[in-house]
Figure 1 (spheres, rainbow, N blue to C red):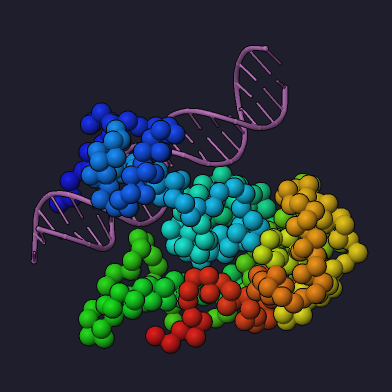
Figure 2 (figure 1 turned 90 degrees about the vertical axis):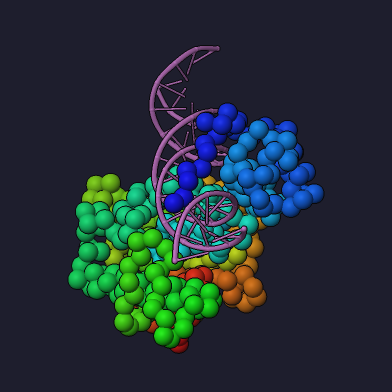
Length: 338
DNA sequence: AATAGATACAACCGCAATCTA
DNA sequence: ATAGATTGCGGTTGTATCTAT
């Protein structure tokens, strides 16, 4: 049986925030000897800490390949997409966000994204509209789309499990299937169905870019430029896209299969709101706008890949770019030939 | 200026998976 | 095959900082 690890409290080791001196000791030791063997490391490094504390400090804070500071809009979207797909599997999510730690992502989700989704009337646990918040979105059609999404999500998870088995070389045809690599995972389902866009992402895009505001009188989302309510439709709707830096711009034209069209004359307003609400610099917005207008180059490509509004605006028609972007994030092949 | 409440983030804890002898 | 050690992960807590009164 596994013995309980000796707690810092019991052994009299130091706890709490790290001092710069402790950081320096840990850093210089790891630079000289590398990390690992955390149990023995504190004593060798001259630290009155348990190995676990040293490991956490290194992996969550001192590691040189960690990016700190504000999350970009694209990072936010990635987190939301992957959370919808993977749930609270922070390490798996972090694997797709270069230089971000699972702890940082978890904190960001718990302190900001979760609350903001709740404010949008989205249940952050299920990524579905709360029953009483967006009345029209619980229509039969939307429920069907949600079911399709959930089915596809489960399938993707099952594929992840299969892939991890395959990579571990444990997928011999005669061997009994090992348990899934994560706790409390649901079993996969039989068929792959390309899902609709996540309601949560649609709402996110609109609110983040200022397309919608809440009407506190009837609890609905409203656009400042139209009276469209927040329901799925196939009519022209305001669209936005994102490039590598986040906010791009918007269009009131119906989007094509690849995503966005050009910017509208309202961009100044959106830019102002992006700076006001999200803290984006004017320089960033200028770059975004250029990418949006030209629709070419890396930023425009990223825009296409990340334009989660595409299939929404086109009435939930199949959209390879959107679904592939999610599956790519999770390293899952949509063809599913295992 | 003082205080309370809210927020953000670092760090800890316990459990489970994995490794190793 | 097994027990013990180690590592990884996710939930939770503690604390510093910010903001409103």
